[in-house]
Image (tube, rainbow over all chains, first blue to last red; front, side):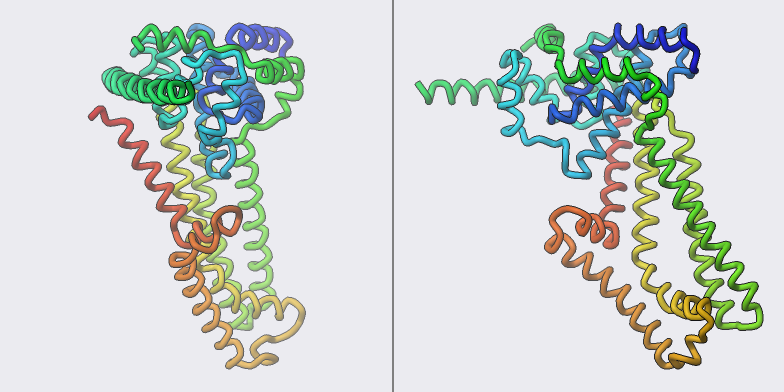
Length: 175
Length: 221
């Protein structure tokens, strides 16, 4: 895996699907300063595994598998070392400073509270993958994926409603 | 928020400039990427080094035993240390083989289960090594003195050696009990916490819990 054409093809594919890297990093790495490290680590893993990629299958599916696997391992490692985990109160100002609206920021905060494998299911679901594709990437049955996603959606909705209520009360209180 | 609203919010995530820069950097330095190592490869490298060092020690102990073939005490001490190292290496090799089988291209659940299973084995091995390490002190003392041409038993006396062995046993027991009883109170973070967690078996129990919780993820109910 060293020919010029392979590199060119890999570069092109990675550029086309760069949004996957960004989304996975956002979901698994609350500390913004560590996200570039995670992105780099995923890129290295992708390049190292590129020789085993079957071009007859969608690149995005293969890329998601690797990106999620690297991100979960990265998340666990950083959690063990006590780094990478930013308390929600600490993380909020970082997000509110960005151009994202409150809805996206709240959604990200709620996703952060999910378990690593639940996050994988939710990220794929939010990115528009169907249950069969999600089941294939994660390696569980389609029924299991569908049941878990349905439950998580309810949890997310409840969490987001609670946060919006709290934010509303705060806003009312400051008037 | 309805289904499409979730996806709509997700789709509106703004690209992060720092991450985009990291991607660009990765793409522009593919030679660097090729030379870089994933965390998995670093783990493999570290494990290989451990195995190699242990084997070197086993070979050195073997050479020592052959050199002192007529001295039963030396032979026994070298055999004790060597067999301990071989047992550790056997487990390390099993872990290394399991690590080698890992592939980031595997389905997420399968890979994460394998990684957690490896972590559990590693945590168990570390707990055993730390708990039993003090017991190696006496045979190590005898072998070390012999390497420098002395005779520990003749020089230091049988009583001194026996007292060392008893102290090692008491120390191992006290360290294990202390780590279990006071580890979390004394060490809140850092390497000391890692050490007490590993010695007390807390790290192993946590790894086992993570593995069990992963297994539960596979169940629909």
